[in-house]
Image (spheres, rainbow, N blue to C red):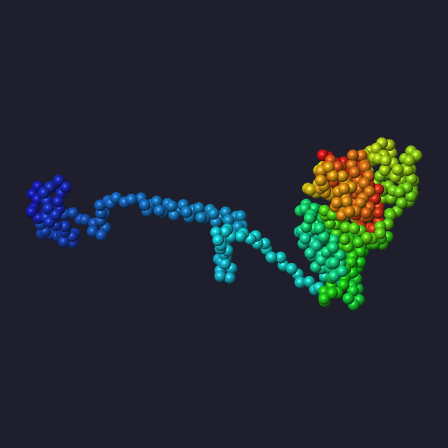
Length: 450
């Protein structure tokens, strides 16, 4: 430090006190020269580049930067996930406009929720072409989801006479339960011979009548379809299928099976013929094949009793023991009932204790549960249901069995039960009674549980 400091300080040293700020004189370097008063000089940094005093700052800015970075990172991860999963990054929904307003709740009621499905694009069908009109009808019948839809489509596409017949058959439809309607729809659809694009269709038009000939590509079966021109539109009138070999005529769409409180089947007005019976023992050749008996011999096991007699008595016509020992038969249990049917037949069991036993040649037996009063005799039930008609009722073990007038429906019940089983045989696809004895066997061996 200077021993003799001047009055005009060039700089105040840190250990010199009492110096006022107006005594400090900062001098530029360019102003220092020879002859300048001696003293202590210090060269300082320009004012613009000097550090000011430290000022305390808060951490808000840093926190905001960190949060923004975290949000950006999460966003990048989400976009990467959507790209890898091939999902759209943005999903735009149309805003309700005046033409499509959002439903508003009225009177404090919640708005009705409507499930919208994608519209189905329908191909325009030329109803002036009988082939196109028939194929359109078949498509609607195949796609029908309910029995009502099936019947309405059938009636709409049918001729006036056919529509009238169909309308008569639907009497009592409202009395059916949902399960019965579902079962009836399934049966009605199963009676339609499926068509494919490989099938050949030819048409012969003569005035207001057209005949379509359909030849199945896979089986060779032939269908003869009659269409009538009414009000400039072709309408379905009749359909018959026949085998390519024996040309036996069959009808697939003339009747519907509508079980109701008054009838378990449509009254069949056509006459049915017995199928071939080579040995004339009462069993058809097709039944002999099922039972394993001989087609050309009335007493297949040579025990002195012909095959049909043994079958009706509950014994095995192909060997010893009871009928349950026959390898061609099986016991099927469905809910509260069980019976015996051919082992080779297809069994379709419904949730409502109904069942369908189907052959491979178009026949089937249908079982449906019907209700009755507990303690009511079967004859009284039949007379009540069929408005004064009487039926022959026979006792088969513990069961009572009534036969319909056409012989194609058995009603099996017991007085102590509040239900009975309606068993119907439908030979409609061939017009031949090929399994009438098997049908009676199923009725005779019906077991009902409490």
